[in-house]
Image (cartoon, helix red, strand yellow):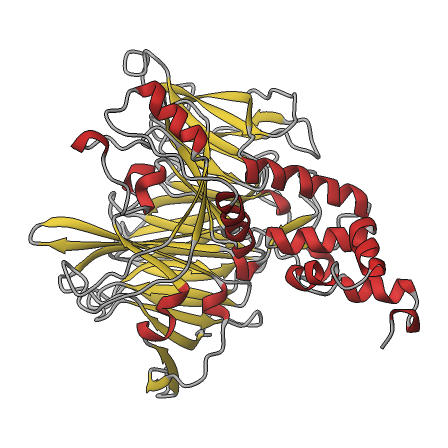
Length: 559
């Protein structure tokens, strides 16, 4: 088929559906293709989306050129690390609960009247390309806030409350509130109450939102998924001390993953659930993935994956609220999954970190063995480690220094760039590494990895001999802003019983941010860091949340 055999408009539609590698190759085929790819905003937008691992929401109403400009501005800032400190928010370092979702930061606050049985939430809509920013305080709740999460796209705030019934049996209450005013959400079914004989003050909660669904895991208690608009339970299970659930996360609005840490080897269980379920419905087990087998018992497994608060693929793109959203969103398959495995090694804890892309868990694999794992004895595919370990990055070492590894799409944030690099030598033979003062963006997007490799290939690798002083360290950090790291094979040693060879590469971009940053968070437009004040201890552990973003000049306040 010749290029002249179809109208230009048809060729543009075809080009918009091709992957970025194919588009880049077609630029070399003819001047016509080169011109279309370089000049048509629709093709450019499709190319930039694929390179960023994103997809268009489809209902934003923004012109293509505006969407393209938004995407280029954001991607350039993250790719080059050129994020400027544009705003800051005062915080109380003793705050137990805070959340960043959809460009909105919320933090717990203590009641002004000193009532220890009540708490409230301060909300800050961060300045962005679409909004100058705003802040407000929700009214004090008539109960003690145990945990919360939010979905600004639906104006939704989900709070967790622990209480007791009239029969003195412990229970928890999930309330579905408006993020705007703190009162019951107009679309909410109402509070959801769950009772149990196993709730205590040390109970830990893991809570995620996926569109109309809220999942809650209470360790040593229950796991359930409930539709917050209808009150319908789509899965519900009690704690099994012999086979506990260590963590869970959503893959999309029909699939979720349970993490079973005490099995040999530990496992990911992938389930599907139906939107038309009722209180008696149970999810369907689709597949099981083996994690690295350990010699000693697993203490805990935690997973970090960006929980998409709304689904670009849903009809109409979801409800519209005053918060709005960017016109594009990370593809579900391209999200990073960061898994930290803590092993009890002779009374002390030893950690391993496994990183993979969500696409590995979406795959339908051929040639895998099956076992009778279904609820009625059905044969379920069991993917052994050797069949998928090459799609992972796996090393000895954890992410404890990062407090809570924050993930958005294919990117996640590290407080120390050496945390995922076993090969970095300690300068001068001591324990202080040359990157210890850096905040680093890690990215599993193959396009970003290829981009960094091309930059590294175009220059020599600077070598700096010890001993180092702080100025030399910062100079080296600036010279080595980009790196690509690969995991070495973890052989049968220490806590890993079987060899595990990961081949997933990770691109690192080091940011030039002050060393006093103690926590980092990331979302679609910005990086946030918490820094201590000089009189952190004397003033009740106060600090500031600093917002690092691209060309914005608005400064919000909170409280």
